Image (cartoon, rainbow, N blue to C red; front, side, top):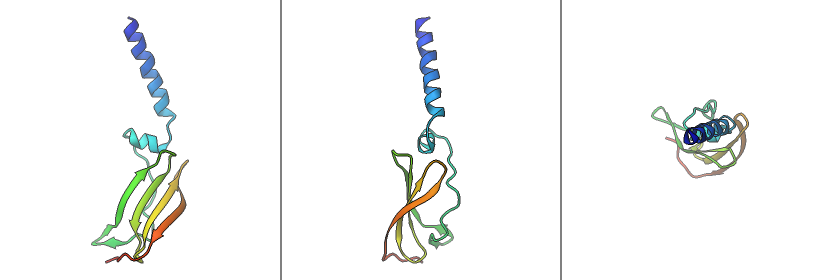
Length: 97
């Protein structure tokens, strides 16, 4: 009986923690987060957007690494709550084919 009570309390605590998580934690736990449309300046090659990687950060932000249509490699930051575009870093010298 005591073990069941402990399991119920732990389950309730876990449920409360998950419901209070930010978007990056929700994505980590298997939930879906809509980031909105693909950036307008992304390079398309053979009809596919050239997005090299996307990652969630511990502070709740998302980093998107992609190739611009002018050849720049861009590391774009998106901040929560909601998805809003923040600062970016870019390197030139790529080729968008």
